[in-house]
Length: 121
Image (tube, rainbow, N blue to C red; front, top):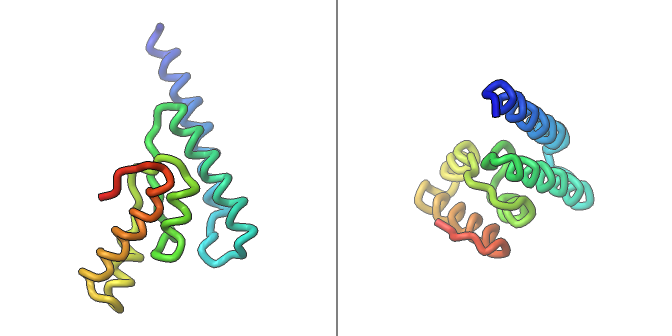
C-alpha cells in the first residue's frame, strides 16, 4: 500500500474521531447539568471513545472530572486509558489534604472501573 494512501486513511480516521470528540466536548460540561442530560452526554462520549478505539487510538479524558462524576464517567465510557484530574485533585487536596485526596481519587477510579472489569491502580 502506498505511503500516501495509508497516511490519507489515517488522516481521515483522525479527522472523524476528532470531530466526534469535539462534538462531545462542546456539550460536555455535564458536571453541573441535570441527570437526564448527563446520560445523553455520556452516551456521546462512549460513542466517540468506541470510534477512536476502532481506529486504533487510545482514549484519555479530563476537564470537569472530579470525585463526584469520575466513577459514572468511567463506567459509561469504555476503556479510558488515562484521566487528567490534576486540577480537581489539587483543589480537593486543599480541603482534604493530599494523601486523603489521592486515596479518594484512587477509590473513585476503582469504583468506575469495576463494571468494566478493568484493573484499578
